[in-house]
Amino acid sequence: MTMQSVAAIPVGDAPPVRTKTFIEFEKASIRYGRGESSVEALTETSLKIAEGDFVALVGPSGCGKSTILKMVGDLLKPTTGHVFVAGREIGATPIRIGMAYQNPTLLPWLSIRENVMLPLKIVPPFRQEFRAKKKGEFRERVDALLEQVGLAGFGDRFPWQLSGGMMQRANLCRALVHDPDLLLLDEPFGALDQFTREELWATMQDLWMSKKLTVLLVTHDLREAAFLANRICVMSARPGRILDDSEVTFARPRTIDMTYEPDFVALNQRLRAMIVGARAAPSLSKAAGAAS
Amino acid sequence: MIKDFIDLLRRKSASTALIVGVFVAWELICLLFGISDIVLPRPTQVVGALIQYWPAIMPHAYQTLYTTLTGFGIGVGIGVLLGVIIGSSRLAYDTAYPLLVGFSSIPKVAVVPIFVLWFGAGTVPAILTAMMICIFPVVVNVATGIATVEPELEDVMKTLKASKLDILMNVGLPRAMPYFFASLKVAITLAFVGSVVAETVASNRGIGNMMMIASSSFNVPLVFAGLFVLAGLGVALYAAFSIIEYRTTGWAHRKTDPSAA
Image (cartoon, rainbow over all chains, first blue to last red; front, top):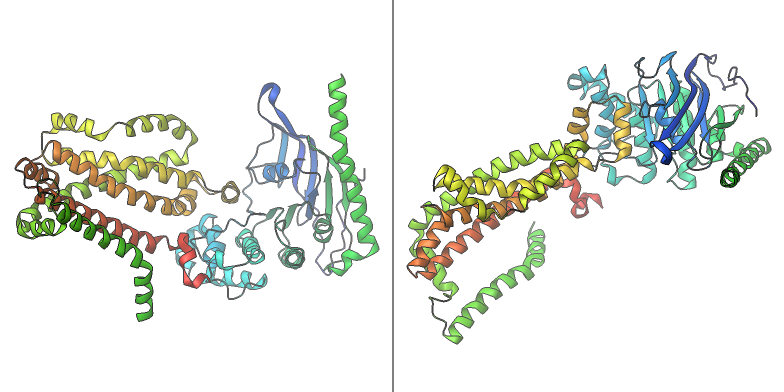
């Protein structure tokens, strides 16, 4: 197990990396259901995520990656233990969160621009100014963001007129339009073809480098994790816990070609071996449980 | 423009031909077998009665339309309210749904005498019957639309700290609109059934009452004229709600939208 500090990551020409802990899991566990039929989804997990960091969670399916994401988003409460955000128990500090899933869930009755604008209608302080600014400042803000992800001129289209990749770009814009402190991504590129996916990685990297927000990414794709993240946490099969926590030190901006270089491939192979091992482990423990 | 119109005619030609064909066949069968107009009047006789009694039919038609629309309006209002409550809360759904199903499976004819007992014969029982019959389809559809919001979208909204009301107004209700309009088309035709049944049982006005009186005096063409009026009103209101539906929830019918191509 390699537990390294998350400080001093070379990030291209970025300003000095902030190392303040932003999110902290303190022996947090989650148990679904009650009594004997309950399932432990996450065993006592401790994890620190620095402000401005880009962390990827990988692991076998059903290992509790999404559970961690939902806890950070305050959608799930830990059964035991604590989750701290900005030094206080989650919920106590109002932080702005953006979230994007694999399913773009754009609202079909709204244009792309109106879809992306939705968080501004809900999140304070934009909420109070929404009526006054929706045709002026907010519209420009949304259009600028759409342009940044390569959707310039698509604001008036409706979701069904866009391809899957374009919808996912719009989904990212919706997750970012309210200037969140924290972006939660749950396999956002999982349903796309490889080339579209790689394009979106580059877009995502640009967005992260320009906005300097903290990102937590859940993914099955090890190349994706290694391309995008500063840090990769490998999780074990259910009940989930963090097996390995490694830094990714490739210089930014990273390119797709870099993903075929020996260092990168070696990292992928190491991660892959770890996950294959993690997948095999639970059947052993089950057998042991049956024997006892 | 002209091309569109020809296209529309072509698409509608089959259904138009069917309607015309039914009436022609009806007319011919009556003539061929010499069926008495006391048993089954020919369509031409029905239309004749319609024209002959038009001044007498009008107030009745107006009365039926009035009771139907009033009952429908109140029923839809209550239905939407209940649908929103049941759709937004699991607890309300589990609690209220069995009662609602029981309530809706009572044949509405059976409650007309009770309404007459409470409010006397006339307009009020007809409105109430139309109202009762409307509620259920609206409740079920609105509740379904709201309750089936994608969980991912709900998560996204919750991480934005959206309140239940925010989610309802921005996601739940707009999403439920196609379901709601589908239920309106069902409800408006049912409302006619309700008000006519009530008029037939206990009223001195309305198409249902007119048909009762006409049949007791063996004026069968007038009875059928009443049916024609009801069918006409029903189709007109159905069409009206279809147009409103298309205008407001066009996004749900995008397959027929030429701009989607």
